[in-house]
Image (cartoon, rainbow, N blue to C red; front, side):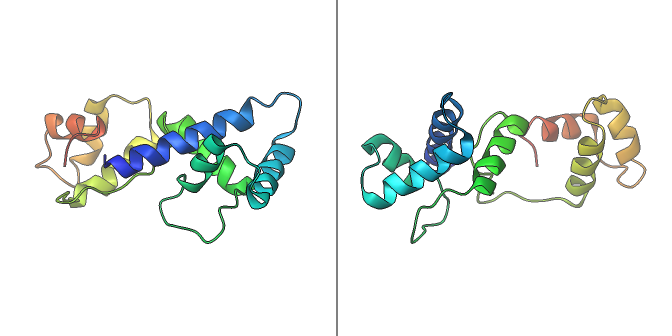
Length: 140
């Protein structure tokens, strides 16, 4: 993972934690408060820094929306972090990767051997080790 993605993940996590930990205010109110305080230049420095570095692409206004907040929250719940997924240079996407991802998404708790059996119907050259390595996030 590139260092920029790591910083984006840290910033997103800080914003998510700040909003989630506001027990006396609703999520909607807290998001509106962050946006208003940032626009007025009154947002605490650490939150302002996180708000400006939480996106992959630079933005004219760093307005946090409910949709963005809940998308980041969903990503963190599914993947365990809120860092953006960025393709590393030199990564090769093989034809069987798409089917492997589809099979895993449909059957997240199935064993690799059973998933390999289904995958090998279309791609007989894929080995158990390749598939296991791929699912652990290290393979190509």
